[in-house]
Image (cartoon, rainbow, N blue to C red; front, side, top):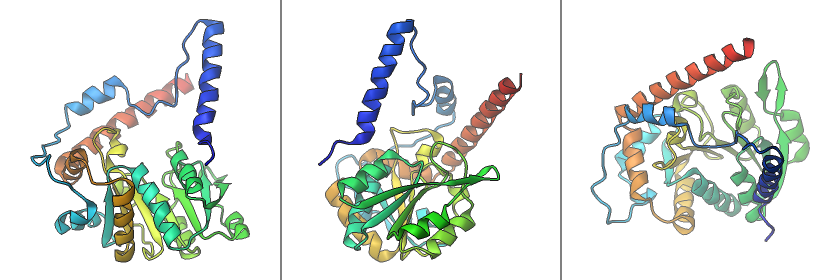
Length: 287
């Protein structure tokens, strides 16, 4: 198996950073830090009410989850009845790769930019992977329909919003590409549920990955769920058991929090904080 190229590139970047810091005597600011700042954290902590988990002893799995919890998760979406639960989006991605192999999907098109783990996971599972860039015009990103048609792929991977841009693909475009491809995987881990709840896909040939706590910058207590049909839910749960095992207590806690009113309050805090940050940034650029 080949090296994971993403990490080798990071090694090279870190080496260049050290050279520059050594030459200038100043530490560089890392704009690719995934953790939020202390001011945001302290503010959210004043709002956050996680509750508690009483059972730390027994195994928990997606397939053993109370059906009412599954129903509560899927009820947040207009056109879906099933989902599979994972402890993280990364474990969900690995399980999706295994399921796609089982479904005889071989040639994958990843529309970039995208989360690095998707590309590396597909390569690890020996898929034929091609990458295409989003089209960009009229101030928005668009799915490159014409380029996709030229490449005769079995499945398409998109990210909503477009990775590391905060810009959203129109839901109509997502439905359009879903209707015109064999299988669609939509990574919506950074997408607030209200921006994607009305997405009307054919879940016989679609997966949508969500990771709610990522949208409010909480990374230590989290879970992920994948919208799907009944058959593919079982396949995802089977492979999830093999690849990542049971759900930790932190994920059980995260699910409970996501379904609570407090999560909405956390979303409101996040939206208020990031809106003010964008306004400050805009003011500084115009000075």
